[in-house]
Image (cartoon, rainbow, N blue to C red; front, side, top):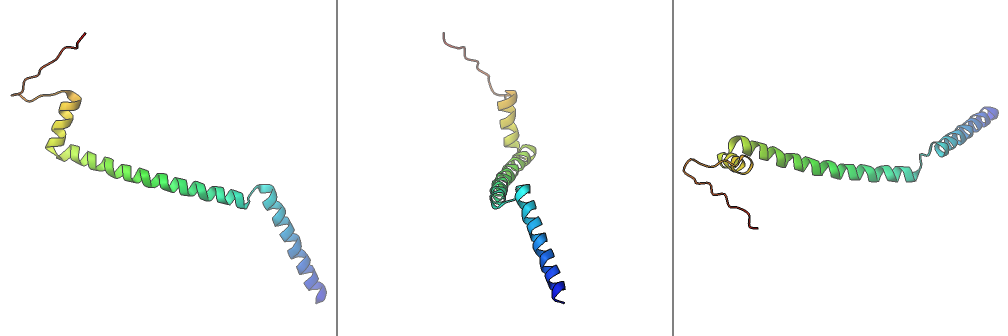
Length: 95
């Protein structure tokens, strides 16, 4: 029975050495883990910023669809439209 224990211990030690060799050769180390953790934190922060920007843009879309004042402001700014009772004055550039 002692030989069986020695065989199991030798096999476990061999497997441990194989795993350590694989870990050393594959580049998976504590530095890689720390770098991946930093990357995950950065991506999480970027994701949160984009989520907030999406909410802001969604609110703008709703306002453009439903708020008459916002629609008028966009028509005036982007399409240069005026009301029927307004007078458009175009000023020339000074030389």
